[in-house]
Image (cartoon, rainbow, N blue to C red; front, side, top):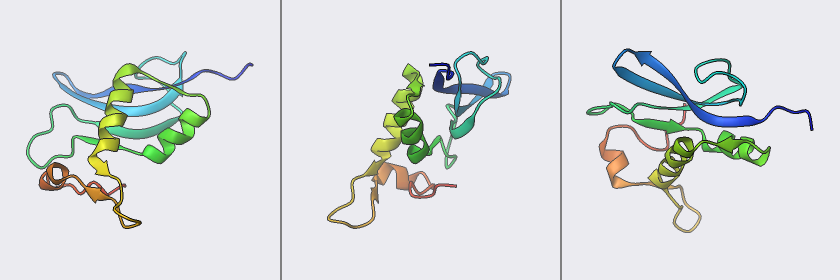
Length: 112
């Protein structure tokens, strides 16, 4: 198999002492902050107040994982955290956001 190994990992952005990470799908041979195939979300570890801390495109994550992409340990924790923010739909209705996520000012159902 000559296809490159795809990794879902964090690429650091932001200023010195003010980290901000993009969740990306990239070739495993690319440098951490280098070329990537697709941006899948972001993680802001220093979010305060109403700022959005985490946004993940779970459909695209599932697509890449189904294609054999490997998630790093930290990326898989963040994706799990993002999935737990949206609770399963009660009897065919819309998914219900956790009360904590709704209080932060950013609805969990907002995707782009």
